[in-house]
Length: 102
Image (cartoon, rainbow, N blue to C red; front, side, top):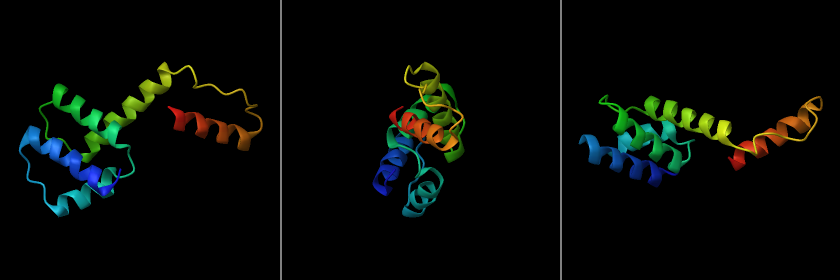
């Protein structure tokens, strides 16, 4: 996620729980969730507010994104590879490519 996307995410969160979002807040969240895709983080935030009354933290977002990714992998028909698992380097690269697609 870019810094601007983190700010957008925090703006959406703030609209729901009225938190104050300062530059320092966005910088901290960038450190905590900046490696996630914005669309995944936004969906995680949306699901959190639909299911919980707890104050949303970066850890909640990360946990929900992990669950979303696992669900996509479980439901994906491209989550298998035709490469030989015995060739570990080739197999790992094939799995990385598949994961990126999902």
